[in-house]
Amino acid sequence: MAEGYVINPEKNEIIEVEGKQYRRLCVKTHVITDKDNIIDVVKQYALPYLEEGDTLFITEKAVACTQHRAIPVDEIKPRWLARFLVKFVYKNPYGIGLSMPCTMEMAIRECGTVKILFAAAISAIGKLFGKRGWFYKIAGYKAASIDGPSKYNIPPYDKYVVLGPEKPDETAADISKAIGYPVAITDINDLEGSILGTSSKEMDRTKLVAILKDNPLGQSNEQTPIGIIRPVK
Image 1 (cartoon, helix red, strand yellow):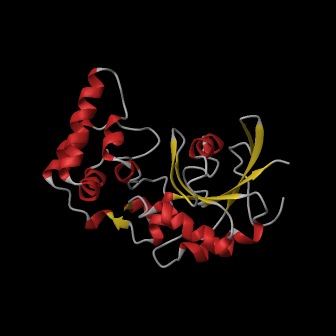
Image 2 (cartoon, rainbow, N blue to C red):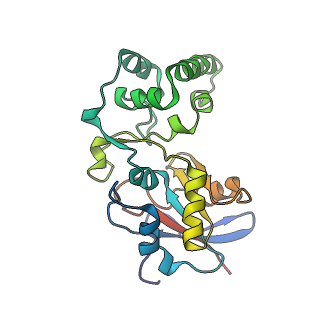
């Protein structure tokens, strides 16, 4: 195994999707902050190990942190509406989501009060029919990608709310242009996943989710926010 990337010991290195096998290589970095430029980080840690046919993927949190989208919890003052709405939020075992007043407050700021209230109303209707997930379908990726403080997050982000990245498609395209490889910005956890941005519209988001569905980068302190998808030849 080449120096510079690792394999998460709790995950399989290789996955088969649509009859083809892919390696998922995890790239370890320093703790990324708003002092970093995400293109510089990718060039430093991932570019030396990329090969023809590879696709680079980056967690949404790593990108968002470089965009000044991480806010200390003690700087967020939830309004009464945020404190009220969290009572009706499904508590996801794999993430904080909007189950805390501070994360709900940021969802209201990001999406607008009207949109959040409408999403909450539709979600309530969905629950009557035993359906989940309608809230995020209405509120959109800006609400779904909000990550709250947790003991599983690397400090200092155990005490931060991290918002979704701004302009993920454009950001992925900028990174791709700088390194010469296709890039995806991902929101994957141990329960579900989505692709927030791709450097090209031709990239198959459904297939990318299938390749990454078991969250090969990990969910807590692995410190591997960047990964490489490499087809097995």
